[in-house]
Length: 236
Image: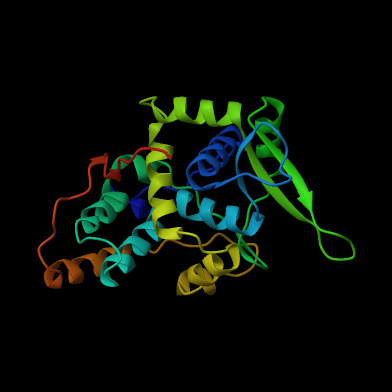
């Protein structure tokens, strides 16, 4: 079973909220300065949040980023096995939730999902900026939300989210939302998608890249510890 073999899923609002919670915990920056009290982490750009969510929802695109990082020498060749697991293991395939493309690339409204986090005291949205300049949303994870995200990461049934988010964090680094979108637009399937339509899978192309690279890559060191093909790293 591969990502391309499983029919696209329609994520629920609750699943979307869980992804946002996990992304804030794994990929969020430390708070400081004039940030609200009681907050643990923050993602200060919706564009960055959307780009991170795209990789979390699309394991084939995430796998391709891992392959690219191995080719560039940024990751050990052991991550080729992790990338292959993203394409072939059941867990990532069943959690494949394609996104529609709009003006700035992959986009799905986060208001309803984030409202769940706010209702339970897990997250908070604040706007920054001074008119007439556009106001920007900042997405905060509360201290209570960080605690619950860590509990989720330790739960067998839901730990997959946190494990895959660690890979998203690894390939995204500190790049801005604009930079992440530019990287995603390098994929023809992404760039050529018509506005309002679902961005298609690149699973077959990534499989071909893996096959070619596995023949030429130097012998890998220790393969990263995995759970179901996903790098198993401690949440920061």
